[in-house]
Length: 263
Figure 1 (cartoon, rainbow, N blue to C red):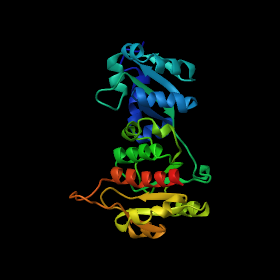
Figure 2: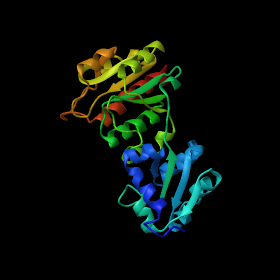
Figure 3: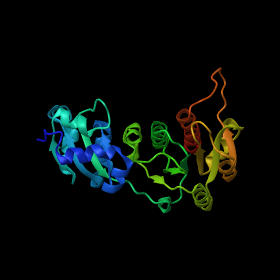
């Protein structure tokens, strides 16, 4: 049992909250029972370490069984050590480390639905879009431009494990992404407040498509909009001034999912 907060391993894990440290170690943090469970179910060979408290082990024997079957090293730690390792203020008894996810753009085969986050900086927003894309049955999520780091601890937490369910690809060049999707017969819709209403394009959503979402404050610039086949908006029928990025993305992705299901 690890009880010393100054243990070198404890310090190394805690430093994974920093991007430079993650890149040096080629590891990232996975926190909480749900995210760790999804790691161990869907990407067990990526798991490197699982650190848990005695209380967690007693409450979650299913997660412990998965951890023991995985290649990960399992270590019991004190509550104080876990708090030191975790990025959250009140961790839920378990922290894992995993190898960095490294999905290449070429992995995309013949997708029916893709979400593209361009210059999306907030980790909570990006993580929620990934979760929504997973729920809508998307084939991939792509982070382009200067978007948030895929392995940011807050992003990982906000996906609640979806980051392990579908390829999430970091590829800076949006033009290359759109070109590849076009080559695969995918129509790219840019989501913007001033586009055509989404209800006007329902028939178009039956075919393979991708949704392009922009920065939380600035939206998509002219160059990004020009790459899309059509600019589309989510109409507001009530008095709300606008929709936030994650909500609008969920509506767009599910509109495509409904169209595909009905086809």
